[in-house]
Image (cartoon, rainbow, N blue to C red):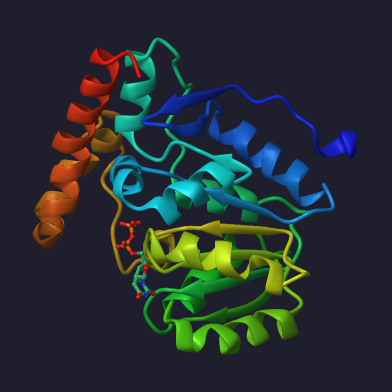
Length: 251
Ligand code: UDP
């Protein structure tokens, strides 16, 4: 047993998915414990849409239950945990966790996979500005299509990357990691990061801090990306209703 890798994290079950009750800083520390553990780890940053998706998508639900860490990326998850009487300290977004990990001096070489062409490269440059010592083993846009898998795996294996960030959007990115992590033996930590590269590269703007702290990021997204209406509706209407129903049923 690797004692160094052992930690006893508090978890909250939300719609059947275990969510880690950690602050952002604790999550970064935990990531480095996982990196040092000597085995491979997949971590995720679930949001309300992902938990709703997991109810009908069995493969995705299985992945969410097999990850080494799930940090709560969404005000909705913080609300749900409080509603269950098991509060989580704060929302930890994918982009904040990614930035926190890459800001540490001892971060092993990273690979940024996904997003539109050139976005991963710009995101890597931004991360290097924040931490000039960061070793970027590679960046590549790629695609989650099955036919591209071998090419992507070869690139990552040849790059010497030990940490892999994948931006194909959920659930594709996490299903991709789950299918392929074992084929990339040097990668010790892989994380699905959604739109994080876009935020870092500046191709998508984050909601102002006041809207984020007021839990109104969904409104920002609705104004800026109205085509995402269905996703936002899922997050702010469907998810809370499912939580209320689960509570009423004593689940
Ligand atoms: N993406 C991609 N290939 C795809 C689908 C999505 O590279 O086939 C990228 C997209 O360009 C974006 C990222 O996946 O950079 C995350 O997309 P999404 O908008 O779903 O992010 P979220 O809102 O979940 O953070």
